Image (tube, rainbow, N blue to C red):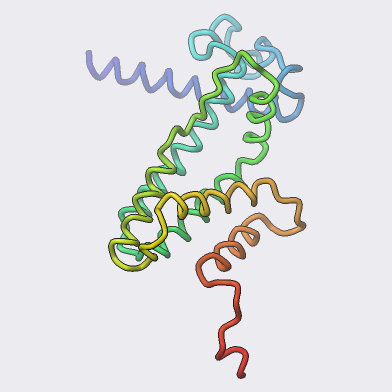
Length: 202
């Protein structure tokens, strides 16, 4: 009986994913408001009434898809956190992983943010919660404990600076590849702006 339940749950999850992916394709090609639930379910080869067994609205699909992708990224961040790398390298890899997730899912994030801004009734909690900041803070504290980061700077400042790199890159109008933009800023933060003396003398 337990195994049957497990199969049923797996089938439900698979159906939910099919509906979500079909809906996303339609949202990207037609727009969220222009896509009807009937169209989504017809494309998914399912009855229209079945939709509400899985999602309460079209907007809930956006949140589900974004949360799913953030969940994958979060697992990557937790793997980085537990790795034997030093703290500066962990932070560098962490920002690159988050940046890559953003770059790969930009159409979905833009659609979600557009809806988020234009709808006062929607639940405006971010689907990823506070996990990103928790992991970032733990790496900063680890770096300070191991003398890899300055101890005279409050951890909150480090946190704000690294979060700021992500935010500024997401809003950037520069004609630079997204990951290049992040890596340049990381290099400036970790290695400094001033040219080293040895380089000046060469």
